Image 1 (cartoon, rainbow, N blue to C red):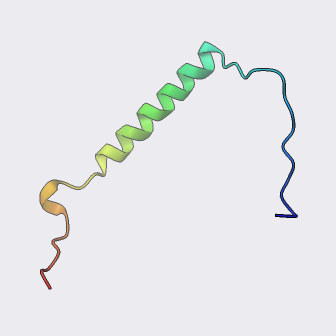
Image 2 (spheres, helix red, strand yellow):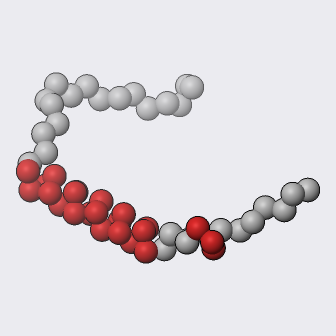
Length: 51
């Protein structure tokens, strides 16, 4: 691992504003909804042949 980057030290704790958190929550909710729309129905799953 001779070419691994050295991590920088940072003494400040990361703090997200409530606005940033809400934007993130909305983005996650939208992504979950989009995934749910394209989730196959239980009968649509491919069946495995017993070989």
